[in-house]
Length: 121
View 1: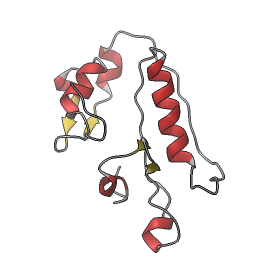
View 2: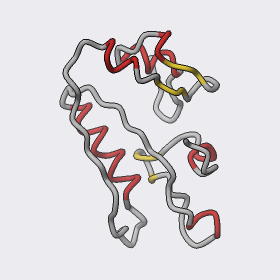
View 3: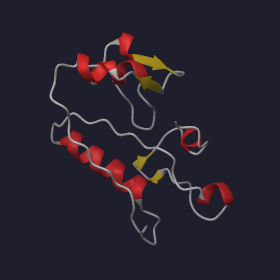
View 4: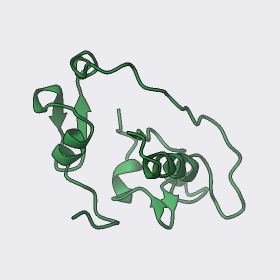
């Protein structure tokens, strides 16, 4: 059983999404690049896309990352198949200007160091 705060192995995530092993390239235990062929091989209609591109954070620091995680968790909770891709959070943390850009509380990215390396492709 999955324990909160610990990422699922990427092979389990891919399996849960119906992605066959030949359609993804793992980068360690918790990241992978998904080949375009996975979309055609799925046999499903293209999914819906929700972009969260700009938001003014609250005083508590809740912004795009927290909102995106909450949307994904909410959609998953009501039975939708969900895949969340967080890419290139704000550069503010790099320059010591604001929080970690990894969400907050139970709506946060783990491990936090990986999202802020600015090498998320």
